[in-house]
Length: 420
Image (cartoon, rainbow, N blue to C red; front, side, top):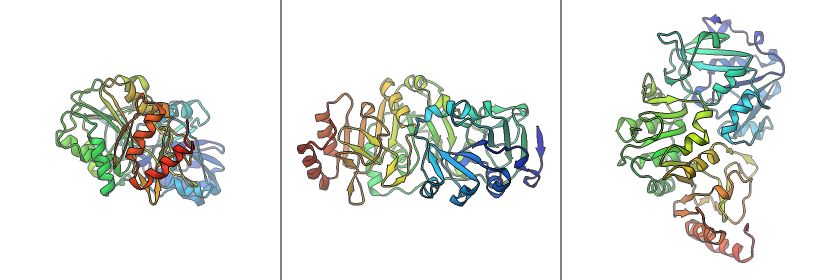
């Protein structure tokens, strides 16, 4: 292992070869010093491909596409600008497939960039803010370069040995943060409807954004909730400190909130630091169908851009923009459907501007099939589509569409313009 005391000593060209695929932790797990070096010295590296997750910084910009190419599973955040500029290629895959793709498939990692916390008393390094899909990439990468950040939390979960790292550089800087989003009136009404589906003792999965945070804010009167999710946010820390999330009734990982990464602010990082009740795990575990099915009362809360009257979901494309992802929605919805007492939820506002988001036919791709439909929730109510015929689905989805759009949707049904 090569040890560098300052970032200035690092020459990425010594380790990166032309044609390499580079993978790093997403969101708050981004090793900012290393990605900044990559962007600044990209001309010296030759053409390399970078796999991006959800960005929490502005490190990568469209102009970096002059020497770097970018590929991602999502169009979230800053990835939208890359896509608009033609600098981002999107791989529309289920999140559960990423470990295989990054370790042995078409996206196999040659170089992995990590942000780690300082070594513990055994000499091993915590993955700090993101285990997620980087664990799979580490396993087969040619080179692993780690930024050891003394301001990154030491979290429970996988620990890396020195012989698993090829280069380490010591840094001291605040990790990237994702601030909570303010919920408006519509979002709070949707959240209240979703919260009505969540009983004491349920285990929660949720995605990013204002809606999941608003749902969590509605649960202050619940008891013994658990978490098994792709991410943890500041709201989880609040509910754990309040004794609402105890993880005491989970079927698996009892006593532990399990997720792939931390996606929040310093408040969350400090809460998770050396906290054995918070455990980061790899995607191969957090999204494993057998693990999800074995978790009783799993409530999967996922969002959508639009839902058609048969229950198909578009969570990827709005207009000409790729803004979302196939992601883990189908993984978690199927897991919740198989879970004893599970609740699979897709939640969305009934409108976007003047347009209905309950539609006769999708304007974009089918991200989640109608065969995986569970509960669809808007600010106007809850539609339980589980095991229902197409006719019943149409009736129930009409009932939660915006009243101003119901007549047009009924007309589309009469004209047989809906999917059958």
